[in-house]
Amino acid sequence: MLPDRLAVDRTLVMGVVNVTPDSFSDGGRWFTPDAAVAHGRALLAEGADILDVGGESTRPGAGRVSVDDELARVLPVVEALAGLGAVVSVDTTRAVVAEKAVEAGALIVNDVSGGLADPRMYETVARLGVVYVLMHWRGPSDVMDDLEAYDDVVLDVRDELARRVEAARAAGVDRSDLVVDPGLGFSKAGAANWPLLARLPELDLGLPVLVGASRKRFLGHLLADDDGTPAPPERRDHATAALSALAAASGAWCVRVHDVRPSADAVRVAAAWGEAESAGKV
Ligand code: PMM
Image (tube, rainbow, N blue to C red; front, top):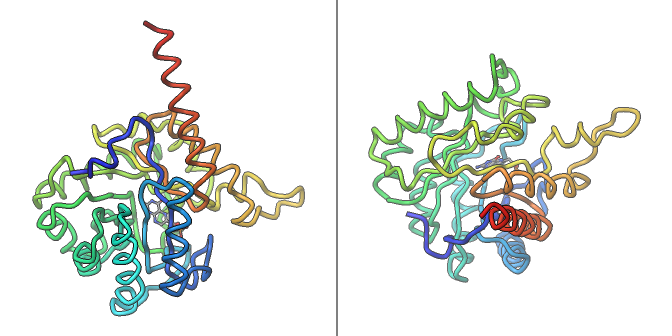
């Protein structure tokens, strides 16, 4: 069940705390536990509703880190941020990391593999009874760009998510603990991301939807220089905030972003807009 603190009348904002030396978007900046905790505190002050702590980069082409390294990276940060009263999610594809992070205070497991990377993930989250973000995924980061073939990307992603949801339910995960995510950028390098955003309501599986567009490659392409050079990750934050407003207006439950304040403002704009729109219809 979602904690009561998250029961607000607007789209939530999840701030990214990557404890990795090599994330594409903010690689290495918050790599020590102290720096990561300080960064998490700053994101809370900017309006983050949830802090997403991850110790393994999913940058296109990235290889794996060992379980021990991943645990050493995330556990002290999860513990410290949960100790401050934050709602913490752990960004991991490993059941053992999910379990230890929940013991350290995480309330949400955010699995970019949607349960496909670790056969023990569903039974683990079912036993822990925590919220589980199930993302659309077709394969690990070093091969994901080769797994991009869709008839209709929106319908294909919805059907693949529906199958994963069924499998999670069969393993005992409570429906009220499930959140789905179209997995922008994962086996979707460029144009395929736009229909997923523009047709977000078609992903409807009767479950909350999380959108993670922040600083992704397709925004770099959109904002490329005249000579075609993609905009670097730190130049993609305004576009990210614009997408947060649009995703919120389309009914997203949560947006996952690096730069929290602009998206915290954007989801409030969308909420005020939606409220005025509904009031006008009475
Ligand atoms: N994207 C990244 C990492 N974790 N989790 C969810 N649920 N959805 C996403 O789109 C997602 C994620 C990759 O971005 P990063 O390297 O900047 O964290």
